[in-house]
Image (tube, rainbow, N blue to C red):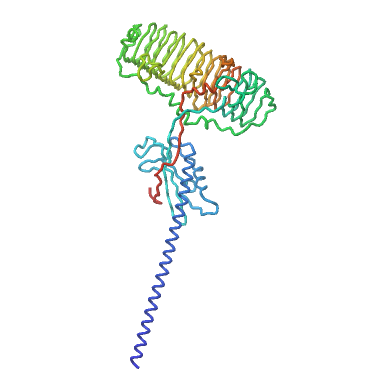
Length: 560
């Protein structure tokens, strides 16, 4: 009996042990299950956060690709970036929070080390102050306590190609007004015949106001230009009275003549800076040159690189230089001429009260360039026929004003030209051949000069500046090529007397573009001529912005 009781105690102990083991195993299983579920929930939350971060990054990168990049000390619009961020989430889905309510997407320079306060393209990983056309776009998303942060580079690449002029006799952001006089606009074909198919148009972001002379034809026949406006159209000559609604759909001029186009054309015009004259030539006293009417020898046999410290005035005679570098003012008068393979003038260049031909090579002028007298021809060709330019005119760069106030006849042949100040042409019986001329200043023409030809048309580009200004094209001067004012309107107050092949009179043969109003206040005509425009020798810049392949990164939620 004693043995049986002992056996019953052993069985109880065994039962208690088994029960305890089962309890421990059950608790462990519960803990493992809970931990696994928690880990799985965190994984799912992090995956969701990463999905949203990547979606926000894509939207942010797209916003950066489609907006203008900020200048120094600027930044992308926080509201636009926030809109791009919010647009990645559907109303029914989870809505993770970003690093802040207003800037969940960040854009900053690709500096090394990272500095998120530099929100424009200031430098690069290897040079803090040399822009490289790249910016980081970063997006952060938090969901159920899990945060994901990703970024990638967006880069800009500048490409060049031929500039395609829109098929428009006039393209303006403002109005087209035929206020007084018998001025008109028309289109012709490449052969000069009236373009009754109306391949080109007058395109205005504002309204079109014609008068009883505005038949849009070179010969009183059928209209040769379509009219497209965002505003109203009034043209009693064609029976459009009262005014009617326009076609709409006119895009800003900046979509045709883009900032990249303007920058590329400006760079073409600025080829004359820095100077190509030799600042280390032989120093010669001004009096030595002024007193020798044949300085440089007959036909320049003994010409050299010359430096004059101070002012230089030359009168009668013909002088030759290879490079001429004058630190002060340079004046040529008294009926004389001079020739140089390259010219630098630290202050004002004046060529007046003289006649003949001056070949001055690529030229840089530190203040104003003043032309007078005549008959006179100033060419920026290299008289030596040097290897760099040959017989092609070199560039002209004028820091100040370009002023041809009177006189004539003139025949000027210049390469790409940039004028930092105002441009005034008022000479008579003049012709200026120049492929491209760019200025941020005021342009005024008068007299009876002409600019460009059908074979050698000209681009005259007015740059945008702090104060809007109007190009004033007056008197009997005529212009062949593309006239552009990106800082205002154009006044056409002219009796233009040049003739197309079929004796159609015009003032502008080519096209006019402006951000302001184009006003006709006299009898000048604008004739859209595809042949002249096809001969323009200008390139256009196109900026392509895209994500840089292979730069996607997943960052630590709290690190750099």
